[in-house]
Image (tube, rainbow, N blue to C red; front, side, top):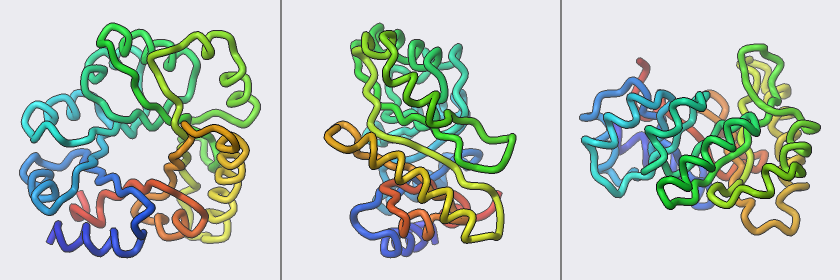
Length: 215
């Protein structure tokens, strides 16, 4: 079933959009099943869980940390994480840079942008984003690479609202990607809204329940 689910989603999103299989809370056996079906990119939102699964599963998996990341947890994933999705402060970026340097790595990161009408979501607004990118502190960081933006739409049935939030994020992404070859990822869209996200220009979707079933 898992393999069929992955295939179906990949057909829907097309070749130019990357699928992150959101595997948080799922047992290793289910991740292995997805791996056997050809899936190589997995997203976890808890550091401890990601570390444990990384130790058990094949080493060619790309691990994405998609949840809110606390600075004091960065050191546990700095040796192997492929992409950190939810960077929402300069302080966190400094910590990632420091831990990447210790491990002689450059860690790819996405800046999380606040686009939803919900207090529970994290993220930078456009002013904070520009201030971060223009800061001297950021310019001195050589062990992180900002490769794009990430955002989560409001959890609502209103498709027009979701679409307009994704459109706003895409517009911001276009401004920053203009002339910047590093900027290649726009991570937006989850199980409930990934089709709209792809229509609005997403290059990466994070899908869990449609692959693994509901928790």
